[in-house]
Length: 115
Ligand SMILES: [Zn+2]
Image (cartoon, rainbow, N blue to C red):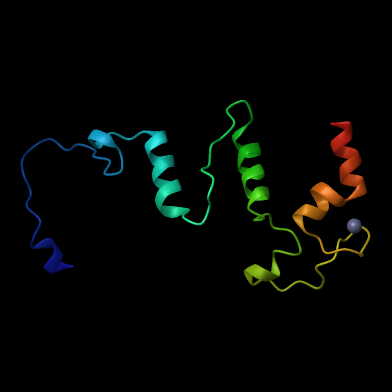
């Protein structure tokens, strides 16, 4: 650390914020989103574009659903959590996956239709 600090030169100018990712050193949400899309999420072929008419938590939930990153019983063991069963706790017949709950489960389908 001392070796790194030897190359630092302090000046007597006023302190200022500089955002290296954005243009002109100014922070913008759009520049940050593009940086995340380009550098942090390289395996995703579709950029994260949020629907502004929906609450942020709904956007994040739908994004996690699309990527199959919801913490359901099928995904938890893949993240290193030890659980007794990966099957649906209601019917105990099918693995509790996101696609099961949101697209194949009769109870969830009836809720979606009601909404
Ligand atoms: Zn079930």
